[in-house]
Length: 299
Image (tube, rainbow, N blue to C red):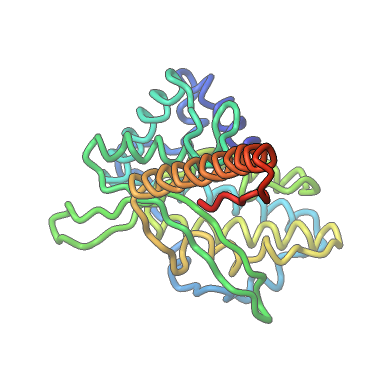
């Protein structure tokens, strides 16, 4: 799966020079559009508004209105952006272009030809750190309960405190954002909505919370209209857990060093094992030639 995700990202990168808006899906330049989803921040994990329970109206006109409104909400949310988000987005765009020009080389313990998603994140993180951003790898992990299945997810994150009020702001970088919401059996309306999403998400957690709410509401509507069961891994609370729950933050530099050290340890262990087996054969042959019992080499 990692290889496929990495390949998909690189396909987008191949045409990025002329389609940055398609890749990132944001119109940079400040808050030019009013926020028309004002109550989105009031939703907590797993909560649903009364409107969610009534979104499957059978009237075709109501159906058209629903999807039109969701599209407007989505575009308005993507349109609004702050100056720090714009700067990080431009830096991420530049990092991806550099990765495209040089190619991704796997440095993990299980290298994949053409690079894997983990190594792609590591390379982007390294380039962002060189650009002056404190970029780290985040791994969210949650247990199953009566509302949600267990799962885990990895993404990049930058914590910025450069604002005038020195308030900490989390900026999430998800290199395969659109794929997280795609459904093979989704309706044409839902697929159109997902198609508006950027392939690479770079934005505040507050904006991400709103996007998740819009897409999960649309997914619920889509499945209800098609009279299909909605997978628990597509529900609101599960999707929130990926990026908005508790996570372990780790520098990608430390991750690379750890994997390198582990890889070296494995190589040393295998070398010792080979030496041990070689010595065993030598001692056995020598002992047999001298008429003494074979000795076992201990390393």
